[in-house]
Length: 311
Image (spheres, rainbow, N blue to C red):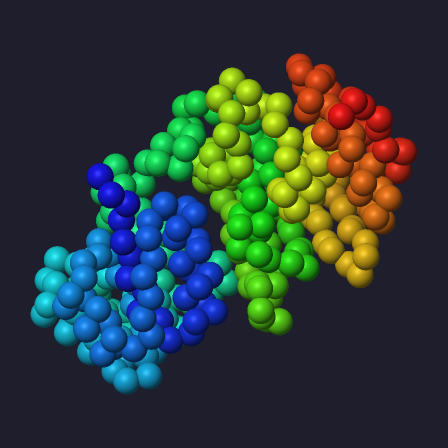
């Protein structure tokens, strides 16, 4: 079955581009974009899609009027409406007119849109196997909820979307990230929920590894945030750390959190300010360990000199 197509009817090109990348990477769906109601109606008259994301604020017609006209042409089309309006009456009116879901434009709203689309798109259109690696093929150690695995998945998404100037904080059910998207000085908020990490990890592996699944664990390839955050995660796992945060500063990276000497001890705060040399040392140590299976835990200090190992 061919992958799903999602029509984005959104006048804000930056928001549409970010949402389109999120849909493509998370759902392996094809995003198509238009900016006005009239363009959407012309598009849908000659092409087909499996779902539509409709902005309430359009330059020609409002979202509710556009929704009526879309359903006149495609009565069964699932429509997810996004809106900056926080009025309950707007959402109620949209549901009365037959929207599938209503997502306010708050920080992290693309993730909520993806979740809404997952409920309406056919399961076989969303198979991770279409991306090259099925979740069942990923070694169990790479799916464990460690900092190394979870931060690696976050870094992969940041690389794919071209984000920069990253600030990351652990919350109750995952991580919140603020970062600058390409070509925009306004930071965006991203949410990474713990339950989604197995799928995200399979996606990250499928997009950067071409070897057999049995060799997935031993293929370090520098990619930017993915390897950088993965190396920090490996160091945090060795602490062991909890309640962590990571912040990019001017030429430095601040890593902070809590750590325990044993399970019964009270957590104590720590912070580490990494300069360029410390980051190189951290990456070298992480690469060296991953190329020497099995993965024996070792205490890694970001201040130690770079490890040496054969090319």
